Image (cartoon, rainbow, N blue to C red; front, side, top):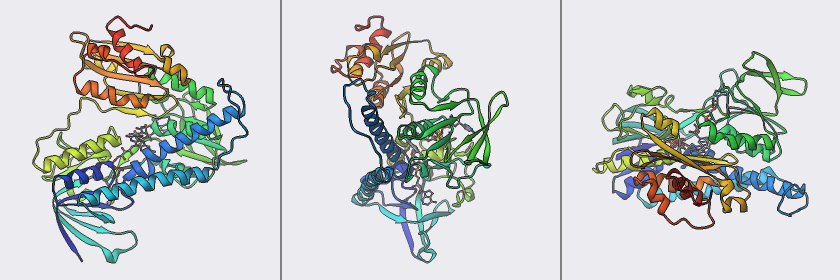
Length: 470
Ligand code: FAD
Ligand code: NAD
């Protein structure tokens, strides 16, 4: 068996692993990256990018349908709208190919050796890698530093296993036709992003959520415009409801559910998208042998992403919440720098999060409730998009921007926004928090007109008591 010796061995080529690889290569660290599937991980292959492509296609189709039905206020009419989901999926796959190919090229350019195959850990310095279906091609890799970046996988409900009718987001992103009746279990990120997209693509969508409201991780005020939009779109919500299992009905499969008053119902479904969370990928590849300290289902790491074993590091979804691509990337870049001898800590002032619902939600830093829970005396103010000219011109007046700042010195602690296209406000929000901006700094910054960003400036001015346009 061939043995490869290297300084850094990375297991997993998702945003955490491949970014660590690129930075390690830039820093001159001999690096091998092992990936069992395509480079790019969940994010590029079956997550962030494909889901946003599908959401965009669904938005476009929905728009054209509204022109065809002459329900748009813009004075636009069009002929019948049609969609060939197979072609949409092929277009999405093209983007995925371009991006994953780009990752391969970046790794190569930076001198990182990509070994295709599934890694099994033998000990903290030795790993065996077997390509799919080719056990004879197994190689052994010995390293000084082992970086674990194996990511996460969809949680399966034990009484409703994935079987082609019951699907995870992976299958939902590659369907060949739009299901007539789609039941979505879980009104979190995936359930609402994809549930909304499939409704816009023409499916009848019912969302079953165990909690009493949608997106329970976000504050109630932020979620209201999303709930109104779901109602307008005709998405049926069954809140405080549990799924009990799949049964055969008169017209195919049905999902048995029970609400908070113990009333049972049957929801007919051509497909059932289960989106009840993701779990770190910790079993089945020898990780157990290392007996590393855990934190719940995730690997426990310190502020340098060190595990409980010397020179074994872990990043990304494997290390738990928030399971977001940009967090994984930031951790990967940092670990490469620490291994190269730089002094780094993972202590971001804020990790932004965006939910690509309609309208979008973006948060960075503390909400008013989180500031209060942290014992900070804070002020907060909102500015509605109904008073923003740009929002009117893009039919996006639902929603608002909210700022949270310390009462004593006006240091900005957090931003929240909900509205059309607000994902792009994430950069400014996070920069202002990371750079320690005060309300006065944002209030006095000239914001281009007409932009949604003016609502950011106005929220800061409003917190200071002198908003201009309301
Ligand atoms: P992953 O991306 O999961 O990569 C891990 C890689 O390791 C995989 O390629 C896997 O094949 C490989 N691997 C695992 N075990 C082995 C082994 N033993 N040997 C070899 N290779 C192995 N996040 C956002 O920030 N924004 C979004 O909009 C967003 N949308 C999402 C939409 C969906 C539908 C999903 C499912 C997720 C989404 N996420 C989003 C989450 C995001 O994809 C993850 O947080 C991110 O991919 C985690 O990166 P990672 O590097 O930790 O792991
Ligand atoms: P999630 O944690 O966002 O939402 C899961 C939802 O399912 C919750 O509302 C929960 O109350 C509900 N739930 C749990 N068990 C249930 C049950 N038995 N019956 C009914 N409802 C149930 O998880 P997700 O939507 O699967 O997404 C997984 C992760 O992927 C996210 O946490 C996030 O880290 C990442 N992601 C991020 C984005 C983004 O950044 N835009 C998009 C998609 C996914």
